[in-house]
Length: 230
Image (cartoon, rainbow, N blue to C red; front, top):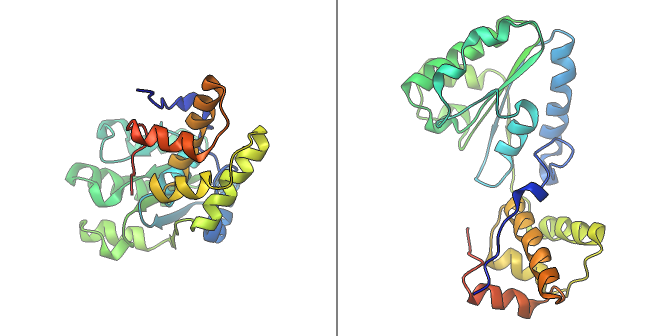
């Protein structure tokens, strides 16, 4: 059985430049301005919401990295509001707001208040629903809804196909025209997951000295190496 290992080191780290905007160009343009505004002493609160796979976490990590990312699984003590007093502009990201427990809701509320009161700091938060629909304490929901709110949309199939085609062309990979439609229909709706799969498929085909074709994909699927993820 051939497995399809995912070498994540070959996948670029999330940046604003490698985010595929699709219908999210307005939100991306606003986020591009945040670092400069923070550096000039501005402060802001932006909330992003949408379905899994629409790019919320990509954008949060692009702006704040792992160090300033608060989420349901992050150690709450690592995100003290005092970190916003260090003098350097800071963008703090709060991910998966709908999953924050009581302690992290309190920390998120503190971080938002400190950021809004401190020039040079900004908050970017994300969740599965718009702020007022979140099952959170009232004061936190109100805070999250007080800033700019953007809904992020999933890429449609044509946009995903265009991205995969562009990546293949950049790498000089020749593949049969039925490969990309099959990947989109049978694997994942998340563009980064699709890119991971394509990266691994490219390497697998190279190791076997075979072209990237639908028969190769079907062989991998039959071996259980490709799993539909939504």
